[in-house]
Image (cartoon, rainbow, N blue to C red):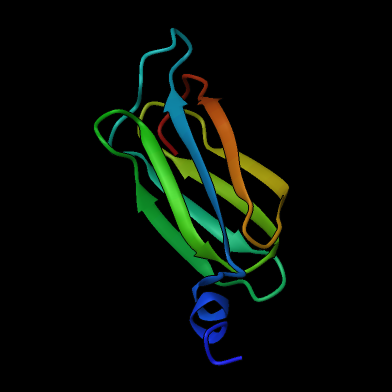
Amino acid sequence: MLAVLPALNAQSVTGQIQGTLVDPAGAVIPGAEIQLIHDLSQTVHKFTTETNGSFIFTGLVPGSYSLRVKQGGFKSYDQKGITVAAQERLDLHEIRLEVGDVT
């Protein structure tokens, strides 16, 4: 029984969400501010995209999330109802931002 305890402790019940921001031409968007909000608790996770436009949120409690992206020169992007299950690695792939006014 004691031999099984380390294996049980190593298992995680959290998930992750990842993706890449691109412009209408498909070029990556570095330095964009991304907020991930847990819909039930309203806990906000923040991330700034890497030089390759990628982002990753790890250690997420299973549940429903909303994603909000803001970047100068582009319209704000909102996506609701992103469901993450325990141990799930959800890939949103490319999120294409539309050119627009600074808001």
